[in-house]
Image (cartoon, rainbow, N blue to C red; front, side):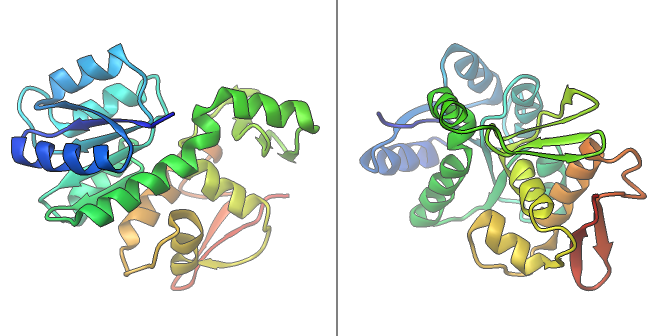
Length: 238
């Protein structure tokens, strides 16, 4: 069964190019030329990933991401001609999973899409989740009020679901299953994004900040994810 991609981009030539290439790659592709139409399409069908531009008419990419994140953890890949840390921080801060700068190669965006879908497969496939649950007892890591369910890819605090994105959970899992191990930013990028690290600290910083906001009582004075300045991060949960 092919994966469904929603493209939201106001450049018709980019839409045509991506639709043709991704269709040949075996995807089902739907497209919208503005954010408002994109949200309408998203609410009408189920998608495995959303690829969205930032600067668009009627509803920009940031607003689109915010609306999607109100009730969905579907992977979101940002496209933008503005390759600045500010744009990345804003976009990822509202819940995007990855970022690709224009101009990009078709091979690169295809690889990013495949990686995002692969990471989110367990989230978006309830049959797989049910099979995992039926085949073995749930592996639960407990750190005081923070409970991490490794089998069902979920986490809760004081019994309340934290609604983590796929990348946030993968970061949490990596830390929690390797207590007191120091991870450099290059190592984190390699483990979580499955790609080479080119010094783009902002992507990691934003995800760590968002994860801390969800699991820590005081994100500015973290109890679990500690920063080792100039080195990286480590997990100190007991």
